[in-house]
Image (cartoon, rainbow, N blue to C red; front, top):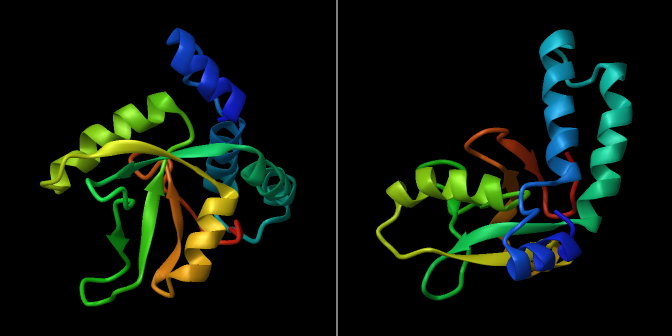
Length: 147
């Protein structure tokens, strides 16, 4: 969601469920079901829109008591991980309900920009990217915003 939309939501409690990124990912998934190949040319325009939108939005992530994002390790024995992020308040609320069952800690919300995600990737060799709306869309990007 746009930062201005999030700030408006915090003030008024309205408008927290809109995200252009979420809409583009939904479109991507719809087309992918039809064409069945991620390399299909029909997806090219949507991929471009996702890449353009990614840096202009902020993402909500659950964080623990130490203010560190929840981690999903890539394999059981690996130290490599991704963090779940959500495109808007509605996605966050819905996803947190499912994610919080996996963790004993009390989780809170933190805003991440694409710059924050890139910086985390530069400072932590084990951080491999984000998974957007893992409970519904499960769309993964690396630390630079590449699909």
